[in-house]
Length: 123
Image 1 (spheres, rainbow, N blue to C red):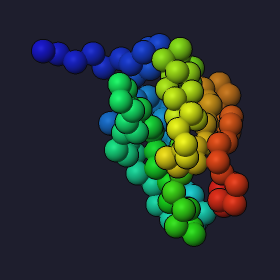
Image 2 (image 1 turned 180 degrees about the horizontal axis):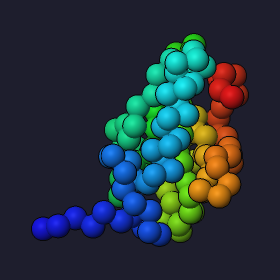
Image 3 (image 1 turned 90 degrees about the vertical axis):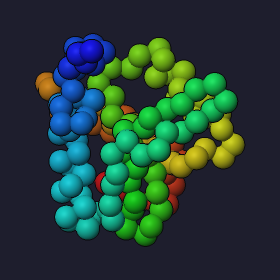
């Protein structure tokens, strides 16, 4: 069976990342790590699971002070993504703080939303 190298909305898988843009954002995270802005990051950490679904968040970040949070990189918000985000935010407490980064080739990266990030040092 030959796997399709394209992801939804035409994004091409790239070196283990779901898109070139996600891979490019990992390079930003490398710069943050080298600059001591964050302690470390992991790509596709263990999935967040509910009774009937799971969410494979893009990155798990460890801040300088040891606190952990997720980063989800979005080029296009699908209805399924919106449902997973709603489930995530309905958990009490949420498993870890979350930053949503939106981006595209033409606009670059931009922080979109933060959830539960109070007191966590991140640019």
